Image 1 (cartoon, rainbow, N blue to C red):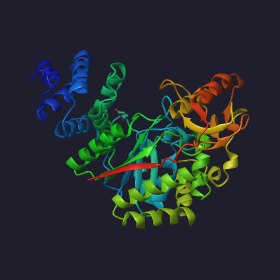
Image 2 (tube, rainbow, N blue to C red):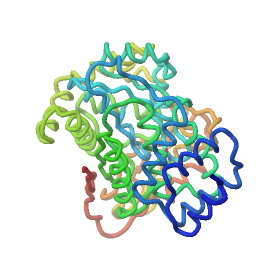
Image 3 (cartoon, rainbow, N blue to C red):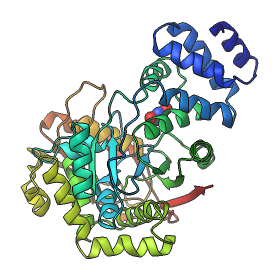
Image 4 (cartoon, protein in one colour):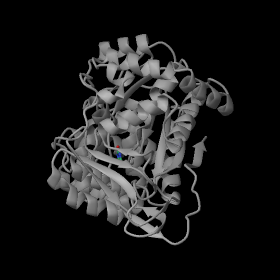
Length: 434
Ligand code: URA
C-alpha cells in the first residue's frame, strides 16, 4: 500500500477502503507518513468528502490508535454528553448532577477552553482544591460512590486525532464534516461511556454557523454511533446568544449552582432540563416526557445539588463554595457597559462576546496561557430586551483595569440595537435520533 495512491484516489473523488484508512492512521501516528502527505490527504478529504462507511472507518482507526478506557468496573449504564462548544455553556455542571441524581452514571472527560469558547475543566478548577487530573481507579471509585466524576481528557485516547487536529489547524482543513465528526466521535468512543448525547451548537458563537451544517454534522455523528452500536442522539441548539448570563469560569460555576438551586436563568434551566431528559432517555429511564419530569424533580428536590457537592468533595474540592457561592473571590475591578442608543437588542455576536471575556482574562488565546478564574462578563440584557441609551448591558470583571477598554469595545461592537423587537428564537432547534 502506498500513501501516494491513497491521496490520488481521494483527490479524484474515489472511496478509500477500510484497509487504506487503517494504514493511513496507523502509519501517520507512528511517524512513518510525513506531514506533507497527510496534509494533502486531509485537503483531498476536505474537497471530496467521505461516505458514511469511510467516516466510520476513520473514527474506529483513530479510536484504535491509542488506549480505550475500560470502565467495566462501573455498575450500570454510563452516559456521556458532548457539546461542540459555545459561550456561557456551563451545562455539564448542571446536567451531570441531575442525571446522577436520577440514577444514571456520568463518567465524563472534558476539555479546557480555547479561543472564544470556555471549557468545563477550567470552570471546575475555579472551585478551590478541585482536581481534574485523577487516576483511573479513583475515577471509577468516585463514579461508583457518587454517581458522577468529571475529569480532564486524557492524551492517551485517540492520539491520531490529536496529531491530525494540529495539522488540520495549520492547513485550513478543520471545517470538514467527516473530519470533525470522526474527531469528536473517536474521543467519545475511546473514553468508555456506553451512550452519548451530542449538543451540536449552531449560530454566531459556534463552529457551525448555519442550521444545515449543524444538522449534517449531527446526522453524521449519529450515523457513526449507529454503525458502531454506540447509542447516540444529537440535539441542535441555539448559540446565537450566550447561554445564561455568566461568561467566565467562577461566574459560570455560580450560575450553574443557582440553576441547581432552581434560581438560574430561564434559558439555561430550560436547556439543562432538556439535555438531562435526553441523557436519561438514552439510558432507558422512560419516555422523554417522563425523563423531563425526573430532571425537574432532581432540581426542585435538591438531590442534584447534593450530587454536585458530593462530586466536588470526592474530587478534592471545597464544597462549602457550592453551599455558599458568595465565598468565590470576585475580580478586583469591574466596569459596567451601557447601551449606545435606545431600542431593542436584535443581535449579539456570540463569538465576539466570548472573545471579550477572554480579553478580560477568562480565556486563552494559546493553549499554554494562564486564565483568571474570576474574570468575565455578567450580561444584564440579552436579545429581545428593550434598552435605553445609558442603560447597563453587562458588567465586565477583570484583575487589571487596563484590560477594560479593549474588551468593552469588543463587547459593544458585538451588540446590535435596532428599532423593532426580535422574534423570540427557540433554544432547541432540532433533534437527530436513529
Ligand atoms: N472538536 C473536536 O474535537 N474536533 C474537531 O474536529 C472539531 C471540534
